[in-house]
Image 1: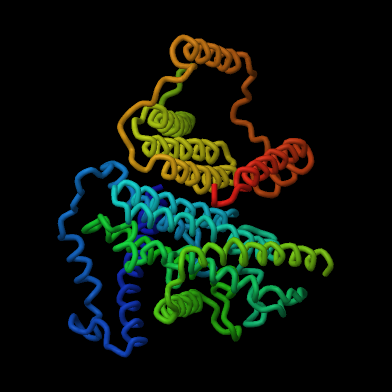
Image 2: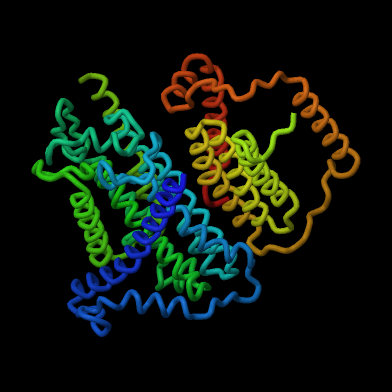
Length: 331
Length: 174
């Protein structure tokens, strides 16, 4: 009894520490990446290569005053950042990092991640509305309409993977992809099934995960040239910090999900030493791609963003699903 | 027979009561909040309680779908509607409708008495699993024993889509 209790506490602490460490050091990685792309050094002063910048930033955020501006809806204003952070931590419960490292494997794990992902839209809406600031409100409406629009093609594309794996269990989805590079879902040459549409699915899923995590070129929610700082304009101190951590934790979850669904999870491309290290390598490669894309592409406009989803991605993903189902029926 | 709190049954009852409490508190907030957005937040709390009850009653899939649809889609859609309709919130109750006063009271009494009679007349089967509540069993049940409900839901959705199209037909100019 006590042992299970200790296990549960340890799992919770490790999950929160993993999320927080990632959030902190991804900010550093992002600033370094931005510096590299824009031919400047990035953070340098604190520690070697600026490695002590994240803890210093954290201390700064925590010691600042938490200002609650006059006229805001206090209860919702305070709840919103917590609600932005909480679902992302819960999502880590069911993500399998390797065959043995998973906090609680559920047979509906994939569904659970989407469920908690959809809750964060509510948090943005609450934060933006309660700030009583026109910029915040416009930004939250944008962020939510974007999240709703891109959730549809993302879910439809995920169904193609679920059809192939025949399960919503993340362990089983990875289990179906073991056996090296060419067995991963992203390639059409999967053993016994020649579905040439898988790269299309992967591309749609990747674009949607960029948009779902509010990353450039789809970061219309916090377009600083138009909306000050977006839905967190009025937040100071750790209120802002929690929104920020939630965003980076969401990026990690997006990378984990892409890895699990399409890139074979903890499977090694050459069949050597499958394990958690391959999973980590894959998610950080994806995160580096996210950062690379953010600092390479300019921001789109809100209309072209919504048009891309409703007029391009949703029809393509629907056809993709139909054709995949047909292929599975025929072969 | 009185059951004490410190048995398995007692703890189970406590968890059930917790879910029930969350649902009722959420519902009360939703009904009595003076600001519409707070009412939506209360509704979300209520949905979380209902989802918890589903989870408690051994159907995690339904619980997840409940959260996904009602919090992820319905509550967000309601918030959109509120923002488009009344961005400047005032702490004010609107004019009372035709159902307020005695008519509302009578309706509430009828509804409550009906539900209470239903609750006491029904033969409740306790602690019995109908099935294992997995995706597979739910899918089989929906497409065999309860296919009528399934088809009717699709008709309701079709009508909703048609209604949306009719409303949107005028275009942006109107």
